Image (tube, rainbow, N blue to C red; front, side):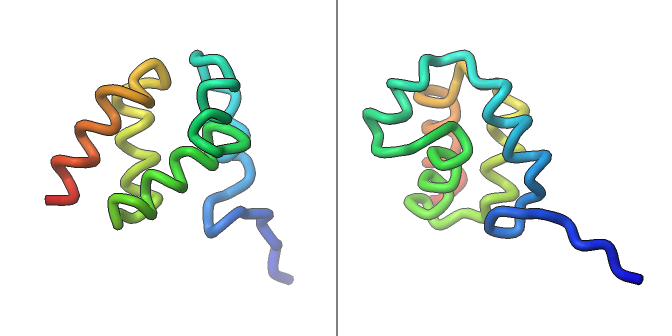
Length: 81
């Protein structure tokens, strides 16, 4: 019997929840960028920079949530060159 895993765009729901719980920046800042939550922001960044969402999540985890609007953006810009 196959076990079905809940996922959003291929990312396990547990990972989405973990990313959103790790947020240290006020939710209003993500909403200013047109995103509902941190995961949505990371997904938008992956699309904008044409990078795999998995790689964006990895970089977000490495840099930490406090770098979502600074170091993460700069790193993704460098990666997409």
